[in-house]
Image 1 (cartoon, helix red, strand yellow):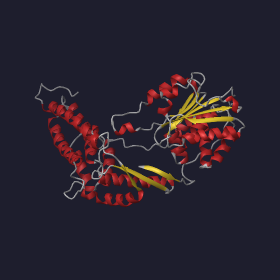
Image 2 (spheres, rainbow, N blue to C red):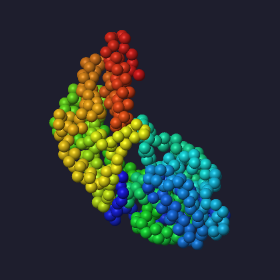
Image 3 (cartoon, rainbow, N blue to C red):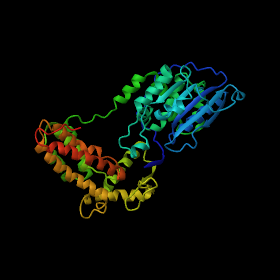
Image 4 (spheres, rainbow, N blue to C red):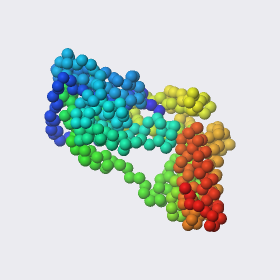
Length: 456
């Protein structure tokens, strides 16, 4: 699902009363001051470059800017090179060469810590502010074990830039203070200026924001919030920490949370099926079953996808003031075909169509798993229902066979459904891997006394 357009109301975000912020010592320009801006296409990173170049002209300086990553397509890595000089003749070339970067405005952790960006920087010369927010890439849809190597990326930046690097989660801070993460890049820009990384006056930058004409008041505030965040990182972190929603902690609280979810997913009777089954177990095995059984019961079929999209839309309308237009990218089992990569090819569906279809689908969730379920005959849906029945039988065996020497295998079997993630061919592949592991664990549980081996 993509948001094509939105207009924010002025009262979204909590706001923050800023104290007077000290003016930084702006760097001098020796020939050119070279700025590299990194980010992800579609997040306004190119706008930051345009504002920077315009601010230089407002300040009576020369500037040249170019994009070094081809088209700034949505979701793609973007590099903006900008050289600032006292006079136009001082700018011989716009592209920043290896080691010449004076200031890095890092709108994305992955792009900023990549070899292409780090190669432009020099220890002791480059000053940088980088957004530490972790954005999950498209790799996750193909590899459910994918994890963003945030620690490694952070270490790479710290090793190169050392004490001239500052990092904070600008996405979360922008969402909290301004109601939209789209202002994160402007926050990073403001933080970079506050650190003395931009040789342009504050008045010129804010005039350039006005000339840009888009969400002037909020972009101006975002610039100032970024200045505050880099000066008071502990206060910025505490501000976000206070907003973290407490998650259920005890086993009973977690079960109650899942009961609420299954009731919305299907109905109270379906949720009771869950609680009745889980109640048969105790201790660590009960907690493991509570997770594994819920994972299987709450498979994401067409009815659930419709319900979740409707819920997401309501949240988006609340956050964006209701003025949104959406395009949905879906691969309906009846209408979609496999693409060149062997995966179902998604199609774009207009909002007018889906706004009529999703409510209807969500209301028809009572058909789920019945003879009248039009989607229930697909191979994936049959597999999902079969996994539920298989799990119930397996956990009956585990409850009967579990002893001190088989407890580890029983717990692993109870949590095995957590590894069956994804959709379509990804889920099928994970289910096949889980089946092999299931056979190993059942062999351990069923082996005669004295012959059992610890589960791997």
